[in-house]
Image 1: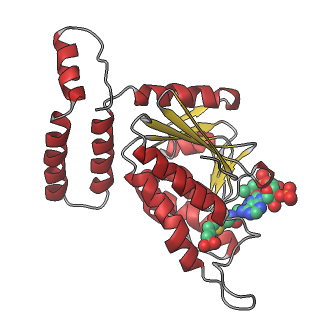
Image 2: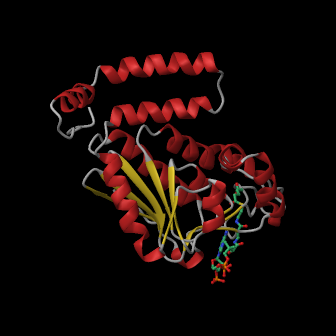
Length: 264
Ligand code: T3D
């Protein structure tokens, strides 16, 4: 599919989505949100794709909503209807990322601010370039965190640090982000994409059905009680145990060889 605001390529079971409005650090427009959602839906359907990289073109990852294209479609002079944009465009995108039964690696190449920070947080794993930073920019323009930031931040870095990031809206640099648990690794910028590809290639060789189910369980554990999670684990184990990859994993162990998982 051809997109106007993102680049989309699939190579060797790994899809790479690149936010591509570098002149404005890849600020999000309605069109970009629609295209991102379509790309994630495409990836969900494509059984040949087994891992995803999300990154940005140029020096920014994403500074959130394009502030020149805001308002939720309200007529001029009337109060903006931001809830519409969130319900209709941002929230479905964040849900599509979290529900995608495949791992998403965020290759955070530069500043991730506002809803751009939320997009980074909605990835499963984050590699940050040493030049990256994370900014809860919302309060600076009199808005509140959205697109999942208020959900992801407290469990990733704890409520006190989340409150500091949200209230003070100061940029968190890559090394601080690593110390807080906001990112998995920090990489020199020139090596970022190579490291992201290596990680995504590795993820794409794993038993994809089990990875997707594990992601589902980890998602559920954030908001469910132990009994519910135990039941989901039992359901997931039943599903995973019926896969060819489970058979292959056991056979490979017994034959003392590396497994060759097919994602089925
Ligand atoms: O439903 C709804 O619509 C509500 C949803 C809201 C979700 C949100 O995301 S609200 C938060 C929106 N984001 C922000 O408030 C962040 C605004 N940007 C910044 O604070 C700074 O640009 C950064 C800290 C991200 C980066 O600073 P810096 O100094 O590295 O770059 P810069 O010079 O400010 O930006 C470079 C260019 O990108 C510049 O354009 P120019 O002057 O060269 O033509 C700048 O205007 C443009 N740009 C950066 N962020 C945005 C943007 N243009 C439009 N929208 C942006 N968000």
